[in-house]
Amino acid sequence: MCFSAAASFTVGAGLIVPGYIALKRTKSPGMLLYASTPILFCFHQIAEGFLWLSLKNPDFESWYKPALYGYSFISQPIWPIWAPLTIWLMETDKNRKKIISYFLLLGTAAALYMFYCLVTYN
Image 1 (tube, rainbow, N blue to C red):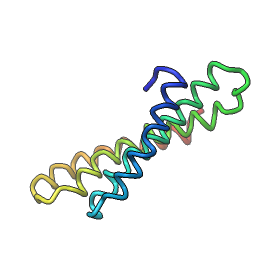
Image 2: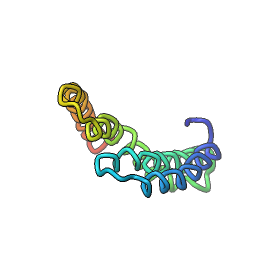
Image 3: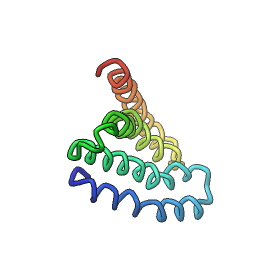
Image 4: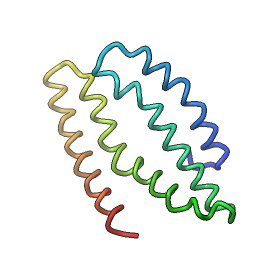
């Protein structure tokens, strides 16, 4: 969200219930990843909220690295794979699934590179 800690925590908390409802109402195994997207985004927003707190408040300085790595791990290695994978799992047409698989390969390559950078560099 990139607005403030309060906005990040509000969005994070606000996505827990819709995410739970989406998971409970999912009937198809191919839809599980799609239905759990609000839960992943909830964790992403909460990590961002702690990152905001650690940057603006010296009392939360010790939260900086865990929040930074939690936020970065979700935003960089996970989302580039998650988005095309959810669509790929739901798609039933073989031709469209093949096209989506190229995006999944690109997302996986980008995610692996970003994961390498997260682990290798400070």
